[in-house]
Length: 197
Image (cartoon, rainbow, N blue to C red; front, side, top):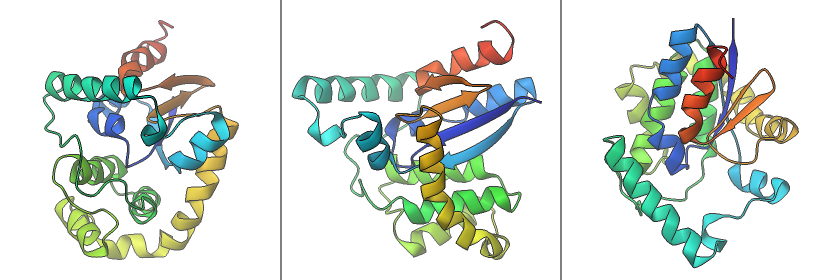
C-alpha cells in the first residue's frame, strides 16, 4: 500500500485551497495518509524560505492574485486577510495529530480547522472554538485525550522530520522519496501513484 506523508500548516491558505483533493487521490490509489502539521516559521528559517510579511511587494501582490484565482477556480470561499491570522497553530495541530492516533478523521478535522481560519473568521487558537470544531466534525474529545500529550510533542518532531525529508513549504506531499510541493502538484502526486511518473 502506498503511503503519503502530508506536511502542512493549518495557517497555510494554499493547504486550505487544496480542499479534499489529496484525500480523493489517496482513495483512488488505496494510499494511506499521515497528517503531519509543522511549524512553518521554523521550516522557513531552516530551509531558506521567507515569511509572507517579509517578501518583496511584487511577490505579495502575486500571492494575493493566486489566492483569488484559486478560490474562484476551486469554488472555495475565502477571506484573503482573515481576522485571526496568524495565530498559534499548535493547539489545533496537536488536536489533528491526536485525532489520527485515535482513528478519527484527521483529514476532515484538518479541513475544518483551515476553513475556520480562511472562510469563517474564527480563532483556532481559542480552546472554545476548537471544541466547537471537534463537535461539528463529529469527533469526541474524550477519544483524543489519551493521545494529546504525545501529539503536542509530535509538533516539533514532525517539523524536524520534515526538514530531514527536504520539506520546505506547505502543503507538501512525500511518497517513496518523491516530493510534491503545493496544492497545484496534487495532479503530479496522482500520476506518481498511478505509476505514470
